[in-house]
Image (cartoon, rainbow, N blue to C red; front, side, top):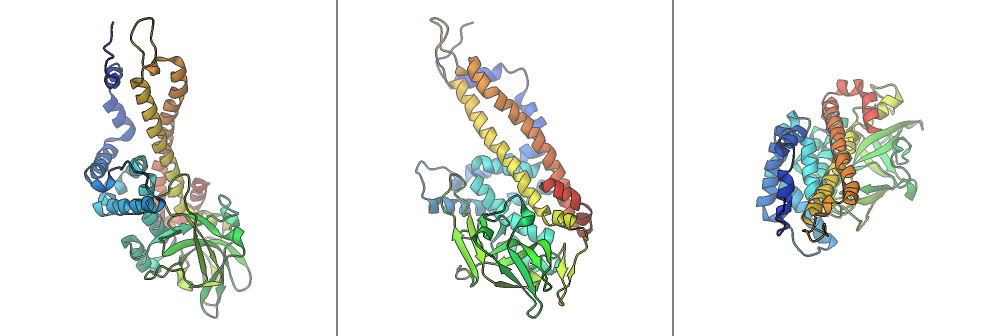
Length: 392
């Protein structure tokens, strides 16, 4: 059979017609109808709004950050994040993250994590006493970030060195960074934008006893002047090799005082006399409950990996089908996807993508149901061990 190979763009259609299965049915099997419908809505927003159209110029760091913020806010204003399937279907949130990362991971962070992650930390770790603060976070009245990682500690969260010592005379917590190794770092949204942070620090009572890592809301900047408050040192970590739409930063506290009520007290609190009280007696389980809100970030990394690999392998396979090089005798040139070496390089990654999609589907479903525990204090406490396992 002689093939018409005069137009490279026809090669994609040629290979698609040779498929032994229906690609639409495969897509539905992997994605589900709900996710496909949601993604179609999202992609329509991106396609129709000129703000999301690409330019051919290389933008400055400030312009990259400006566009990421504007685009993230446009996603929020579009109402797509209020779609009911995000709360009813375990895989739609994953579909949202993957689709936005495929477009621009910085926009994904600005539209979801920057608002949602900070707000969820208040909702999941706070109590009804923090409802007004939660409302301010969700409406954008205050801009938040999530400060856990330190210069010297990342995954080993229980050994973080930032301290929050309770002063019973003033009914305040005193946040302090002993040295630069204890500085909070790589905090997304902190470099330029955040007015507040969820800060994880070792809670110390007046008797000198440390009760482990606890979350606090710390005001960082004056919302009007946007200047750091006295006692807070903030730095911008500048340009990176990726995610430059996100203003990662670091901060240090110098005997910085915050009200007692700024402790997110669902897993433990301190009485006016300085006595520590917690509904979870086991420190390990208490630690697991404290880190429960981080599960979404962990699963988000898996979704980002799926998005990156999907983009990369799709481009590589399509290019290999359209790109022609050499051929048998005087015959037409062959697409390079016909060469065994090219298949050897590409197909294992393609297979890995399908395997990784299956894995992320499983952990997204599990995380969806576990995250509901954060809505109910009693349920969250009963799942402390599972929260710790998911975080690890």
